Length: 160
Image (cartoon, rainbow, N blue to C red):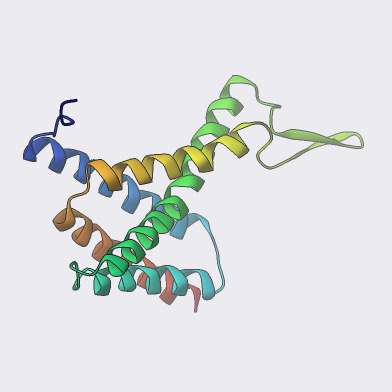
């Protein structure tokens, strides 16, 4: 068996930048869309800070695993809501009553209805895990995590 083909440095960096852009944009969307009590943005900020602190000890296997799972959790938290919104908007344009339920003589908006509610989270988790295993770029990830920490701190300040 031959070894798997490795992407070039520029290709890896491009994928890492794209994933970082999606992640930070997703987190910015969640911060803008979710009016949360201070606990959610504080937890996100603590997880981002934890990722940045754990990056200082890349030699320890347990630290690397903890950092990886913190990052995967943050990625899923930031990306799943915008993907739901894109799906809902696309289906709403295609079939305006798709997310409506009858309430007597009027229609009211129901939340996510359908298989997409069950399919999106595992798909986003799979993307995050594959990215971490194949295309991770530590420098890009550190910059994106610092930007995510800034977003979370602004979100926290707005929710207090």
